[in-house]
Length: 134
Image 1 (tube, rainbow, N blue to C red):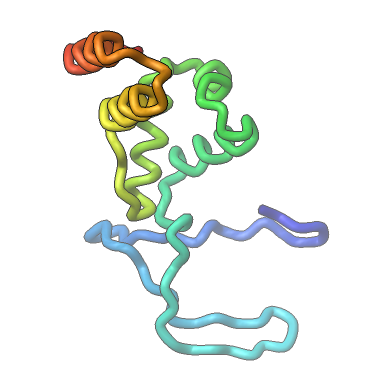
Image 2 (cartoon, rainbow, N blue to C red):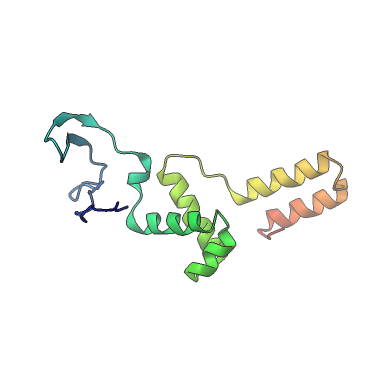
């Protein structure tokens, strides 16, 4: 992000061009007074995202988390959009829950609340096992 009056500079690399491992910041400098701080500073998790992931995340935020709108804007399928989001979640170090697990829990919750009969829940779970969307 460029702020008013700020000149564009080179983007900071976040991974080593030789081995691909994350880089560590070792020096910070104030452009105004020249104060320099040395040490080992870890990069925020968001800086681990590659340019394609950052672009996807910006579109995701712009569309307020609506994956259907994201997939339409980017011209990709819904499963591709979901996979890209899961990839970002994994890159940030979080556990990626499977769609099947989420949908299974949703069916069981509806069964527990009495919104589905046992037979309806069983049918939905069978469809999930076959890989169908419910």
